[in-house]
Image 1: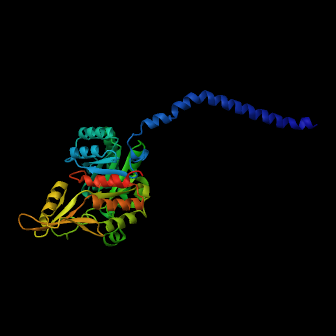
Image 2: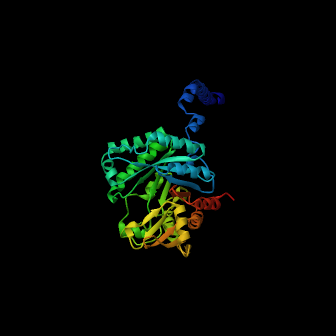
Image 3: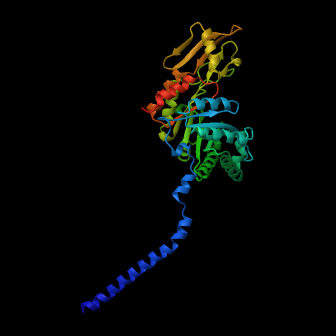
Length: 380
Protein backbone atom coordinates (compact mmCIF):
# COMPACT_ATOMS: atom_id res chain seq x y z
CA UNK A 1 0.00 0.00 0.00
CA UNK A 2 2.79 2.47 0.91
CA UNK A 3 4.75 1.43 -2.21
CA UNK A 4 1.73 2.19 -4.36
CA UNK A 5 1.41 5.70 -2.85
CA UNK A 6 5.09 6.45 -3.53
CA UNK A 7 4.91 5.50 -7.22
CA UNK A 8 3.62 8.90 -8.49
CA UNK A 9 6.35 10.73 -6.51
CA UNK A 10 9.07 8.43 -7.88
CA UNK A 11 7.79 8.96 -11.42
CA UNK A 12 7.84 12.71 -10.95
CA UNK A 13 11.45 12.66 -9.69
CA UNK A 14 12.52 10.51 -12.64
CA UNK A 15 10.85 12.90 -15.08
CA UNK A 16 12.58 15.90 -13.54
CA UNK A 17 15.96 14.19 -13.65
CA UNK A 18 15.47 13.18 -17.25
CA UNK A 19 14.48 16.74 -18.14
CA UNK A 20 17.59 18.15 -16.48
CA UNK A 21 19.79 15.67 -18.31
CA UNK A 22 18.19 16.59 -21.64
CA UNK A 23 18.59 20.30 -20.95
CA UNK A 24 22.24 19.83 -20.02
CA UNK A 25 22.85 17.86 -23.21
CA UNK A 26 21.14 20.60 -25.21
CA UNK A 27 23.30 23.23 -23.55
CA UNK A 28 26.43 21.30 -24.48
CA UNK A 29 25.28 21.07 -28.10
CA UNK A 30 24.46 24.81 -28.23
CA UNK A 31 27.66 25.88 -26.44
CA UNK A 32 29.69 26.54 -29.63
CA UNK A 33 26.90 28.68 -31.08
CA UNK A 34 26.51 30.61 -27.82
CA UNK A 35 30.26 31.23 -27.65
CA UNK A 36 30.10 32.67 -31.14
CA UNK A 37 27.27 35.02 -30.09
CA UNK A 38 28.87 36.19 -26.80
CA UNK A 39 31.89 38.52 -27.20
CA UNK A 40 34.95 37.38 -25.31
CA UNK A 41 36.47 39.65 -22.67
CA UNK A 42 39.78 39.67 -24.48
CA UNK A 43 38.21 41.00 -27.71
CA UNK A 44 36.35 43.70 -25.78
CA UNK A 45 39.50 44.76 -23.98
CA UNK A 46 41.30 45.01 -27.31
CA UNK A 47 38.91 47.83 -28.27
CA UNK A 48 39.78 49.88 -25.19
CA UNK A 49 42.47 52.49 -25.75
CA UNK A 50 45.51 52.07 -23.55
CA UNK A 51 45.55 55.83 -22.86
CA UNK A 52 41.85 56.51 -22.25
CA UNK A 53 41.62 58.02 -18.71
CA UNK A 54 38.31 56.24 -18.08
CA UNK A 55 40.11 52.92 -17.94
CA UNK A 56 43.41 53.82 -16.31
CA UNK A 57 44.94 55.45 -13.23
CA UNK A 58 46.40 58.99 -13.65
CA UNK A 59 50.16 59.31 -13.63
CA UNK A 60 49.96 61.58 -10.58
CA UNK A 61 47.32 61.84 -7.85
CA UNK A 62 45.11 63.92 -10.20
CA UNK A 63 44.35 63.78 -13.90
CA UNK A 64 46.46 66.44 -15.65
CA UNK A 65 45.32 67.72 -19.04
CA UNK A 66 45.55 70.78 -21.29
CA UNK A 67 44.01 72.26 -24.42
CA UNK A 68 46.12 72.70 -27.57
CA UNK A 69 45.57 75.11 -30.47
CA UNK A 70 46.55 74.35 -34.04
CA UNK A 71 48.90 77.34 -34.15
CA UNK A 72 50.90 76.18 -31.12
CA UNK A 73 50.76 72.42 -31.74
CA UNK A 74 54.50 71.83 -32.09
CA UNK A 75 55.21 73.99 -29.07
CA UNK A 76 52.70 71.91 -27.13
CA UNK A 77 54.29 68.62 -28.20
CA UNK A 78 57.63 69.84 -26.87
CA UNK A 79 56.09 70.84 -23.54
CA UNK A 80 54.22 67.55 -23.10
CA UNK A 81 57.33 65.58 -23.99
CA UNK A 82 59.25 67.49 -21.34
CA UNK A 83 56.61 66.77 -18.69
CA UNK A 84 55.18 63.50 -19.96
CA UNK A 85 55.53 62.06 -16.45
CA UNK A 86 52.58 64.21 -15.33
CA UNK A 87 50.43 64.67 -18.46
CA UNK A 88 47.51 62.27 -18.90
CA UNK A 89 45.56 63.96 -21.66
CA UNK A 90 45.57 66.74 -24.24
CA UNK A 91 42.60 68.23 -26.10
CA UNK A 92 42.97 69.51 -29.66
CA UNK A 93 40.90 72.60 -30.50
CA UNK A 94 39.54 71.39 -33.84
CA UNK A 95 37.05 74.15 -34.70
CA UNK A 96 33.29 74.62 -34.88
CA UNK A 97 30.42 72.30 -35.60
CA UNK A 98 28.22 73.40 -38.51
CA UNK A 99 24.49 73.83 -38.75
CA UNK A 100 24.22 71.14 -41.43
CA UNK A 101 25.73 68.54 -39.08
CA UNK A 102 29.22 68.67 -40.57
CA UNK A 103 32.49 69.61 -38.86
CA UNK A 104 35.07 72.29 -39.58
CA UNK A 105 38.00 71.11 -41.71
CA UNK A 106 40.29 73.92 -40.53
CA UNK A 107 42.58 71.43 -38.78
CA UNK A 108 42.96 68.51 -41.22
CA UNK A 109 42.26 65.01 -39.96
CA UNK A 110 45.59 63.69 -41.17
CA UNK A 111 47.52 66.24 -39.09
CA UNK A 112 45.46 65.51 -36.00
CA UNK A 113 45.91 61.77 -36.43
CA UNK A 114 49.69 62.24 -36.50
CA UNK A 115 49.48 64.18 -33.24
CA UNK A 116 47.32 61.48 -31.66
CA UNK A 117 49.96 58.90 -32.56
CA UNK A 118 52.79 61.07 -31.22
CA UNK A 119 51.04 61.69 -27.93
CA UNK A 120 50.14 58.01 -27.56
CA UNK A 121 53.84 57.20 -27.78
CA UNK A 122 54.22 59.41 -24.69
CA UNK A 123 51.37 57.51 -23.00
CA UNK A 124 49.12 60.57 -23.31
CA UNK A 125 45.45 60.47 -24.31
CA UNK A 126 43.98 62.83 -26.94
CA UNK A 127 40.46 64.25 -27.25
CA UNK A 128 38.97 66.28 -30.10
CA UNK A 129 37.36 69.54 -28.96
CA UNK A 130 34.46 70.90 -31.01
CA UNK A 131 32.92 74.25 -30.23
CA UNK A 132 30.71 76.94 -31.67
CA UNK A 133 27.88 79.28 -30.77
CA UNK A 134 24.16 79.53 -31.35
CA UNK A 135 24.61 80.35 -35.05
CA UNK A 136 26.48 77.06 -35.43
CA UNK A 137 24.06 74.94 -33.41
CA UNK A 138 20.63 76.45 -34.10
CA UNK A 139 19.83 74.35 -37.17
CA UNK A 140 20.95 71.22 -35.36
CA UNK A 141 18.77 72.10 -32.37
CA UNK A 142 15.72 72.38 -34.63
CA UNK A 143 16.27 69.19 -36.65
CA UNK A 144 16.47 65.66 -35.18
CA UNK A 145 17.95 64.44 -38.47
CA UNK A 146 20.75 67.02 -38.41
CA UNK A 147 21.41 66.25 -34.76
CA UNK A 148 21.87 62.57 -35.57
CA UNK A 149 24.12 63.51 -38.48
CA UNK A 150 26.29 65.65 -36.20
CA UNK A 151 26.61 62.80 -33.70
CA UNK A 152 27.63 60.39 -36.47
CA UNK A 153 30.25 62.81 -37.77
CA UNK A 154 31.75 63.41 -34.32
CA UNK A 155 32.07 59.67 -33.75
CA UNK A 156 33.46 59.09 -37.25
CA UNK A 157 36.10 61.78 -36.71
CA UNK A 158 37.22 60.05 -33.50
CA UNK A 159 37.56 56.74 -35.27
CA UNK A 160 39.44 58.30 -38.19
CA UNK A 161 41.97 60.12 -36.00
CA UNK A 162 42.31 57.44 -33.32
CA UNK A 163 41.28 59.90 -30.60
CA UNK A 164 40.01 58.67 -27.24
CA UNK A 165 36.86 60.78 -27.42
CA UNK A 166 35.26 64.21 -27.74
CA UNK A 167 35.29 67.41 -25.71
CA UNK A 168 32.26 69.66 -26.33
CA UNK A 169 32.77 73.42 -26.02
CA UNK A 170 29.60 75.06 -27.32
CA UNK A 171 29.23 78.51 -25.75
CA UNK A 172 26.78 81.43 -25.56
CA UNK A 173 23.73 79.40 -26.49
CA UNK A 174 20.40 80.84 -25.27
CA UNK A 175 18.55 79.27 -22.37
CA UNK A 176 15.96 78.09 -24.87
CA UNK A 177 18.56 75.66 -26.23
CA UNK A 178 18.63 73.79 -22.91
CA UNK A 179 16.46 70.84 -23.99
CA UNK A 180 17.84 70.29 -27.53
CA UNK A 181 21.40 70.63 -26.25
CA UNK A 182 20.72 68.03 -23.55
CA UNK A 183 19.23 65.70 -26.16
CA UNK A 184 22.27 66.13 -28.39
CA UNK A 185 24.66 65.47 -25.52
CA UNK A 186 22.83 62.31 -24.43
CA UNK A 187 22.86 60.91 -27.97
CA UNK A 188 26.56 61.68 -28.36
CA UNK A 189 27.35 60.10 -25.00
CA UNK A 190 25.58 56.86 -25.90
CA UNK A 191 27.23 56.70 -29.33
CA UNK A 192 30.74 57.26 -27.93
CA UNK A 193 30.36 54.97 -24.93
CA UNK A 194 29.15 52.17 -27.22
CA UNK A 195 32.64 52.33 -28.76
CA UNK A 196 34.54 52.70 -25.46
CA UNK A 197 35.23 56.36 -26.21
CA UNK A 198 34.87 59.17 -23.69
CA UNK A 199 32.94 62.45 -23.62
CA UNK A 200 33.70 65.61 -21.66
CA UNK A 201 32.21 69.08 -21.69
CA UNK A 202 33.48 72.60 -21.00
CA UNK A 203 31.30 74.71 -18.72
CA UNK A 204 31.58 78.28 -17.56
CA UNK A 205 31.65 79.55 -14.00
CA UNK A 206 28.78 78.39 -11.88
CA UNK A 207 27.52 80.41 -8.92
CA UNK A 208 24.10 81.13 -7.50
CA UNK A 209 24.59 84.84 -8.12
CA UNK A 210 25.19 84.16 -11.82
CA UNK A 211 21.90 82.29 -12.11
CA UNK A 212 20.16 85.14 -10.30
CA UNK A 213 21.54 87.80 -12.65
CA UNK A 214 21.76 85.92 -15.98
CA UNK A 215 19.43 82.93 -15.69
CA UNK A 216 20.11 79.22 -15.56
CA UNK A 217 21.84 78.94 -18.91
CA UNK A 218 21.62 76.22 -21.54
CA UNK A 219 23.70 73.54 -19.76
CA UNK A 220 21.66 71.51 -17.27
CA UNK A 221 24.72 70.59 -15.23
CA UNK A 222 23.23 67.87 -12.96
CA UNK A 223 21.66 66.09 -15.95
CA UNK A 224 24.68 66.49 -18.23
CA UNK A 225 26.91 65.12 -15.45
CA UNK A 226 25.11 61.77 -15.70
CA UNK A 227 26.24 61.36 -19.32
CA UNK A 228 29.64 63.09 -19.26
CA UNK A 229 32.83 61.39 -18.19
CA UNK A 230 34.30 64.74 -17.14
CA UNK A 231 32.97 68.25 -16.54
CA UNK A 232 35.73 70.77 -17.27
CA UNK A 233 34.79 73.98 -15.47
CA UNK A 234 36.69 76.94 -16.93
CA UNK A 235 37.87 79.04 -13.99
CA UNK A 236 39.36 81.90 -15.98
CA UNK A 237 38.36 85.05 -17.91
CA UNK A 238 37.05 86.58 -14.68
CA UNK A 239 38.42 89.83 -16.13
CA UNK A 240 38.57 89.83 -19.92
CA UNK A 241 40.45 92.63 -21.74
CA UNK A 242 38.00 94.81 -23.67
CA UNK A 243 37.61 98.56 -24.02
CA UNK A 244 34.89 98.72 -21.36
CA UNK A 245 36.12 96.04 -18.90
CA UNK A 246 37.64 97.02 -15.54
CA UNK A 247 41.22 95.76 -15.07
CA UNK A 248 41.88 92.58 -13.15
CA UNK A 249 43.45 89.10 -13.35
CA UNK A 250 42.04 86.27 -15.43
CA UNK A 251 41.44 84.28 -12.25
CA UNK A 252 41.75 84.75 -8.50
CA UNK A 253 41.84 82.03 -5.85
CA UNK A 254 38.66 82.96 -3.88
CA UNK A 255 36.56 83.14 -7.06
CA UNK A 256 37.85 79.81 -8.31
CA UNK A 257 37.24 78.16 -4.95
CA UNK A 258 33.67 79.44 -4.70
CA UNK A 259 32.78 78.29 -8.21
CA UNK A 260 34.34 74.84 -7.85
CA UNK A 261 32.69 74.28 -4.46
CA UNK A 262 29.32 75.31 -5.91
CA UNK A 263 29.62 72.94 -8.87
CA UNK A 264 30.79 70.10 -6.63
CA UNK A 265 27.31 70.14 -5.09
CA UNK A 266 25.83 69.22 -8.48
CA UNK A 267 28.54 67.05 -10.04
CA UNK A 268 30.25 63.93 -8.66
CA UNK A 269 33.74 65.03 -7.66
CA UNK A 270 35.29 62.14 -9.55
CA UNK A 271 33.96 63.74 -12.75
CA UNK A 272 34.82 67.37 -11.98
CA UNK A 273 37.95 68.94 -13.49
CA UNK A 274 39.22 72.43 -12.66
CA UNK A 275 39.99 74.47 -15.76
CA UNK A 276 42.95 76.74 -14.95
CA UNK A 277 44.83 79.41 -16.96
CA UNK A 278 48.43 79.44 -18.11
CA UNK A 279 48.16 82.92 -19.64
CA UNK A 280 48.34 86.39 -18.10
CA UNK A 281 46.49 89.68 -18.74
CA UNK A 282 48.18 92.99 -19.57
CA UNK A 283 46.07 96.13 -19.03
CA UNK A 284 47.02 99.38 -20.74
CA UNK A 285 45.63 102.00 -18.37
CA UNK A 286 45.65 104.88 -20.90
CA UNK A 287 44.52 102.87 -23.93
CA UNK A 288 42.23 100.03 -22.73
CA UNK A 289 41.69 98.86 -26.32
CA UNK A 290 45.35 97.83 -26.39
CA UNK A 291 44.97 95.54 -23.38
CA UNK A 292 45.48 91.88 -24.16
CA UNK A 293 45.96 88.34 -22.94
CA UNK A 294 49.62 87.35 -22.85
CA UNK A 295 50.83 83.90 -23.96
CA UNK A 296 54.57 84.48 -23.57
CA UNK A 297 56.26 83.94 -20.22
CA UNK A 298 59.58 85.21 -21.55
CA UNK A 299 58.01 88.55 -22.55
CA UNK A 300 56.59 88.76 -19.02
CA UNK A 301 60.06 88.20 -17.57
CA UNK A 302 61.34 91.14 -19.61
CA UNK A 303 58.59 93.41 -18.22
CA UNK A 304 59.49 92.23 -14.72
CA UNK A 305 63.09 93.35 -15.22
CA UNK A 306 61.87 96.77 -16.36
CA UNK A 307 59.49 97.25 -13.43
CA UNK A 308 60.92 99.17 -10.44
CA UNK A 309 59.10 96.91 -7.96
CA UNK A 310 59.57 93.72 -10.00
CA UNK A 311 56.96 91.00 -9.58
CA UNK A 312 54.67 91.66 -6.61
CA UNK A 313 52.34 89.25 -4.83
CA UNK A 314 48.68 90.09 -4.10
CA UNK A 315 47.60 88.19 -0.99
CA UNK A 316 44.10 86.66 -0.80
CA UNK A 317 43.75 86.90 -4.57
CA UNK A 318 46.92 84.79 -4.78
CA UNK A 319 48.12 86.29 -8.03
CA UNK A 320 51.25 88.14 -9.15
CA UNK A 321 51.33 91.73 -10.45
CA UNK A 322 53.91 93.65 -12.48
CA UNK A 323 53.50 97.42 -12.84
CA UNK A 324 55.47 98.94 -15.68
CA UNK A 325 55.40 101.82 -18.18
CA UNK A 326 55.70 101.13 -21.89
CA UNK A 327 57.77 103.06 -24.46
CA UNK A 328 54.84 105.38 -25.19
CA UNK A 329 54.51 106.35 -21.54
CA UNK A 330 51.38 104.33 -20.83
CA UNK A 331 51.23 102.68 -17.38
CA UNK A 332 50.34 98.98 -17.34
CA UNK A 333 48.96 96.50 -14.84
CA UNK A 334 50.20 93.04 -15.80
CA UNK A 335 48.46 90.31 -13.79
CA UNK A 336 50.64 87.22 -14.05
CA UNK A 337 49.81 83.53 -13.97
CA UNK A 338 52.93 81.75 -12.71
CA UNK A 339 54.03 78.80 -10.62
CA UNK A 340 53.12 80.49 -7.34
CA UNK A 341 49.59 81.51 -8.34
CA UNK A 342 48.98 78.09 -9.88
CA UNK A 343 50.14 76.28 -6.75
CA UNK A 344 47.47 78.12 -4.73
CA UNK A 345 44.76 76.76 -7.04
CA UNK A 346 46.23 73.25 -7.02
CA UNK A 347 46.09 73.16 -3.23
CA UNK A 348 42.34 73.76 -3.37
CA UNK A 349 41.93 71.09 -6.06
CA UNK A 350 43.42 68.67 -3.55
CA UNK A 351 41.27 70.00 -0.70
CA UNK A 352 38.09 69.64 -2.76
CA UNK A 353 39.26 66.20 -3.94
CA UNK A 354 38.11 66.56 -7.55
CA UNK A 355 39.32 64.51 -10.50
CA UNK A 356 42.02 66.82 -11.78
CA UNK A 357 42.95 69.91 -13.78
CA UNK A 358 42.88 71.12 -17.38
CA UNK A 359 44.94 74.13 -18.49
CA UNK A 360 44.19 76.73 -21.12
CA UNK A 361 46.51 76.37 -22.89
CA UNK A 362 49.91 75.02 -24.01
CA UNK A 363 51.26 78.18 -25.62
CA UNK A 364 54.03 80.34 -24.21
CA UNK A 365 53.35 78.83 -20.78
CA UNK A 366 55.72 79.20 -17.84
CA UNK A 367 57.57 75.93 -17.07
CA UNK A 368 57.23 76.84 -13.38
CA UNK A 369 53.52 76.01 -13.73
CA UNK A 370 54.30 72.39 -14.60
CA UNK A 371 56.88 72.14 -11.88
CA UNK A 372 54.20 73.26 -9.42
CA UNK A 373 51.83 70.59 -10.77
CA UNK A 374 54.53 67.94 -10.47
CA UNK A 375 55.35 68.88 -6.89
CA UNK A 376 51.75 69.27 -5.71
CA UNK A 377 50.28 66.15 -7.30
CA UNK A 378 53.18 63.71 -7.06
CA UNK A 379 52.37 60.44 -5.37
CA UNK A 380 53.73 60.62 -1.85
